[in-house]
Length: 75
Image (cartoon, rainbow, N blue to C red; front, side, top):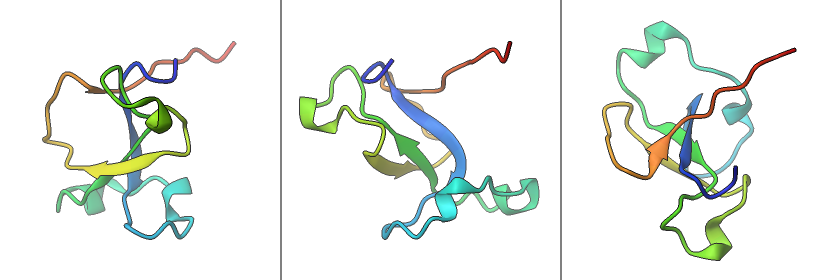
């Protein structure tokens, strides 16, 4: 799955990784539209960016062909 799209997460983005990205932000915090963490690179990224530890930030209102999310089923 790596490299398909930059994966949206439910956590706020911080320039300096401080561990807060392991926690989802609340709906109340989401109203101010902080930057959300994006992970993993996309189909049009350079190979060095195609890893889950690679991260960037984006606004939830951002739209682009290389942004998305993944669905998983818990069996």
